[in-house]
Image (cartoon, rainbow, N blue to C red):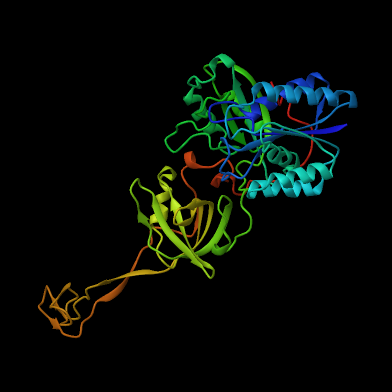
Length: 437
């Protein structure tokens, strides 16, 4: 039988990790004799969901196993969630969904919605009921939304891979120990097949900072690439286990087609095209704010301090420039704000400034003789009552193109510049040997 097991919402800011539970479950399923039909799916959901715990990731395991083992798989899954779920956290509301057979088309459509918008639990419950799926919830059960989305997230279009290593339990909540020089060497050697390994200063980005069980995760274009990276990284503490996931990370999967300013909704990702309406201004703390407009209205855009040098790009915009922004929509007291994750500069207006004219007699510089009284040459003394300031084109410190925040400020779903042109479609085949350890 073909069994899909979707898991979500088991972690909290204080600990836990849904992928860790998935790695333990994968080991148990292999012991049952299950054949994995695909790498475990790591599906990042709408990053703007207000009640998310950390990275808002759901996981699905897809296996072929005999009918007698299905009940054992169900028991193991529920036991692991019960043991490792962070139930003390108010926003942790685990859900598990089991589905036998092919993934229904409407479940795949539902998955896309959960990545791009806020979805109500009743929508998930209706699909689970319509397709006769088995689901189990804890507390308010909101986790079944992501669990069902993970089942539907077959990632037939662009996708990436991540190899995640896990710490020994005695090291949880302690400082992670990975040799940074080995990460830099790996990044240099595998720059064409991995991404977001280090920031602009060469500091590793692969290690998280919370108390969860993850030691590090390296992301790339293929299972072979991330496994190669794994073998190059030098851990200074034991790796208890590791597993390769197939993911929508680094694909901009949370963005849909552009919408009008008047159509943006709070807590949803949005792509909006328009014209720069106001001169960017710098607020206390280094945040940069400006507004864009289209035929339907005007909305503020914000590049916050953690986005780094990206703010210099934003500050170089002027009213009249045409842009496309990718952003999370935030509800503020004064209205909606687009928190910038990406900026496409589509057209730049010409900028000029008025300068004193050159002397028509000798070409020297001139100075004003007073309001509406013309100009006098500083060199030869020529006086021109009719001379006026002239417009001179000012070079723009900006080009048409795509701009992103510094790597350290990228969201999981943000597609880094090096991935442009690497997009791919899914082709099934045998799994990398090994893919789990």
